[in-house]
Length: 380
Image (tube, one colour):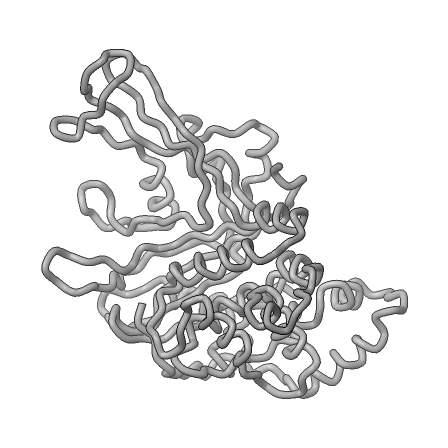
């Protein structure tokens, strides 16, 4: 939702020694052709220093771009994504290059790696996005902008193998079903999404207490009766039905969208600021019942996740500011990307984004990205 260029004061967060680290990064780039002995050095040469803490630099806010900046940092800190980005086919003409979002993201990533500044300007990428209707000086919603970026990235990558890898990295597969309560006849269809939109209230409008409760609520089936009854092909008439969603497959990087913004009838959009704690680790086998899943046993073994990133919103529904917290996949330390400012943070800082009903302008988690602990073979 709303965003601005405000800054938060975090006295307990230590700033990264960016300039010194950029020197080290430059030395690493010179030696990428050599055989590295140290594991971290190997990962730097393969994935790029922007994926690591010693290459983490900020992005300047160039016109209410904090939402875009936060999402870009989450993309760039995910080395599984940057491996795909580095293998894209470069568009032939300069005109095509200016319009190609993944190519412009790659150029920005390379600029962040080789620069010696604390932050860079995402100007060319912003110009590219404006050609696709994503304007600056507009208050974007992070969940909506993420979907726009995803569709642009996926549609503009020409290598089908990379498209499949990108799909396996982010896409959630579910089965939507409708069961007649008279004859038990079921109709279903498979569908996919990039984020799981999780409610903050249950079916009786009670506030949910934890992220696990919100996940259970999302997969809880709903009774359709009265005017909501559906036509049953078996009974040849409208009957009471059970409508729900089953989980089929989870990606390597799972994005959960906390639906903190809502619109009441005849009123403005409002923000739900109440606390919704989320864990550092998730095991979907412990959260969902067998009836809520439609996956084979081999796939369900892989349903254990660790928190990787939090996109947080500070402010009201109409005006505020976004920043991103990400955990390095190399040193496992947490970092806060607040536009041009980058600093190391603790888990206590992350917990401050749970929310607080008494602080309407407080910082609240809006998007949560969990990464698989022990990823197996990607889903076809």
